[in-house]
Length: 171
Image (cartoon, rainbow, N blue to C red):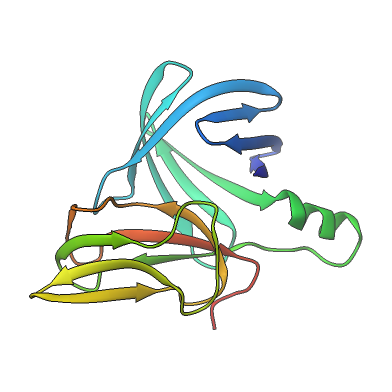
């Protein structure tokens, strides 16, 4: 999947293919792991280890990133959205929605994978709480941007489970 990431006045082309990422045409091997219940991620990039705080700004296609004591805002645009913009049909905006745990529990099933397209109402994650399974569903159609949890992981109320990207605002 190809993205265009804007940081300040600079826009970078980023292509993601599994653990291989091209940034401005330069290849990097990466691994990314979410820290449950937090906006933190452990990132291995080109042999270096980083802890990054990442939170989507709801409804804006923008993210706030924190790393090494600095905070930056970035805009992310899909290659397909960029084509719409170039055709003069308007400025597309990517909207984000993070599905969070409604109560403490245990992740028993993950029904989607990163990069997967989902319809509104599609099952995303099943969390067991108080001996009952709760299937959490997509609030709108979109693409699974990030799966923040793993099967067998205990989560607290409000923990990020799945982040969806969509060209439509939530209504």
